[in-house]
Image 1 (cartoon, rainbow, N blue to C red):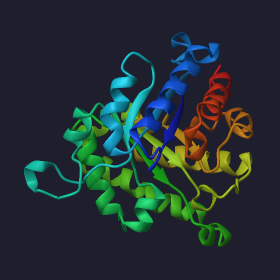
Image 2 (image 1 turned 90 degrees about the vertical axis):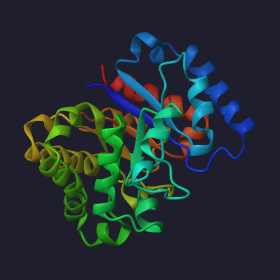
Image 3 (image 1 turned 90 degrees about the horizontal axis):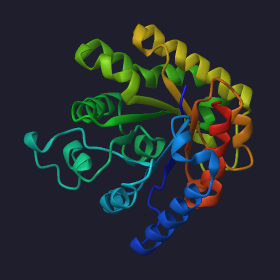
Amino acid sequence: MQAWVIGNWKQNPATSHDVDALLEDLCAAISTTKQLSHDNSARCQIMVAPSFVHLAAVNRRLQDTSVLCAAQDVSAHSASVGAYTGECSAQQIADAGATWTILGHSERRQYHQESNDTLLQKMIHALSQNLGVVFCIGETQAQYDAKQTLTVIDNQLAVVKELVAQHAELLDILSTCLIIAYEPVWAIGTGKVPTVAEVSSNHQHIKQTLAGFADSLSNMTVLYGGSVNADNADSFAADPMIDGALVGGASLKAESFLAIATAFTKGSI
């Protein structure tokens, strides 16, 4: 299975100049890293998710590379059904050059109170406009301590279950246009990291649950996210249940980001 390493830049870098510098470093490093050459891109797909304001510029710079571009969110609504000031439709995101979008990130769930119903509408909107979806799930520290991890995972994966039940016409594309990113909230940006065995067990549960929704979902890509860095990437990449990484802070330095990608390139051989 192809591995995926995705950099979620969040509100970074701050300026267009800083974005240009990061992209130059990233492209230069890829060109000199044998494991990440075009010949090996089939083993590990790299993608970055800049803020909306930088999306078009990042896409232009990456045009002649194997690196894909994603948005960090998408509206639940197209422009045809309302104005929705401050939001970006899937059509606009695709026009800016993104081919994927991240949905369900814990910060969106927490700060914007995004419910399963909202996320279902966003997913339908994105997929209907040919945007792939990286769907984030994961438990909080309190839920982890209470041993509720699998219950939380099941509750959040109910979005996919409802999508399959309500929109059979989208089922054929889900195997290639949907990626699950397991990100325990307590590990994001904290330096706390679950054991590889814990992540592997949770990924196995996610894959089995998805396969129960539809036979075509039996080989879904499931990434791990949460304080992934150059030092621990090898251990995650070595586990067959972990198909890649959704990377936060470590994606803002080309060296550390590509070290993670290199680890998963080797791990996918």
